[in-house]
Image (cartoon, rainbow, N blue to C red; front, side):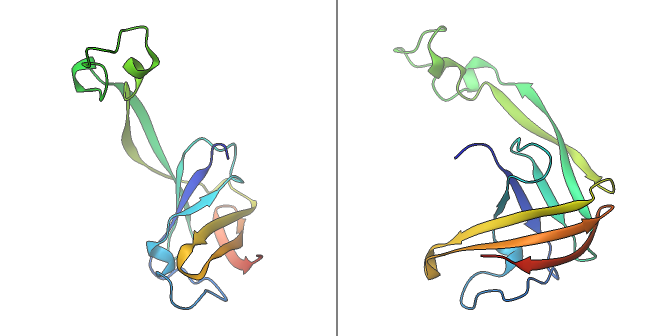
Length: 134
């Protein structure tokens, strides 16, 4: 358990030895813990092999719009009062042309009862290739 990042693959990204009978790679939510420090970031790998990272900021959500803050049994010092107090706001995508190295992406396919892992290799933000490692 712990924090992880999400990796989205565009249509046209080829994964070798991809399992039969499962959703295409671009429709799968891939996870990684290997790019920088995991912080619930979202990364994208485009069909032409570029790596992008989502930029975002947080905004405060008024108590009236939070899921538990208006309940009679929840006080301001209750942890439930804070639930939903921050909203993530998308600011755009930046090209990670500074990324040089490898990271794993993983997805658990229930339909085939298998955890599938690939290692992606990048040189200055450009995909060199994937290798299946599970």
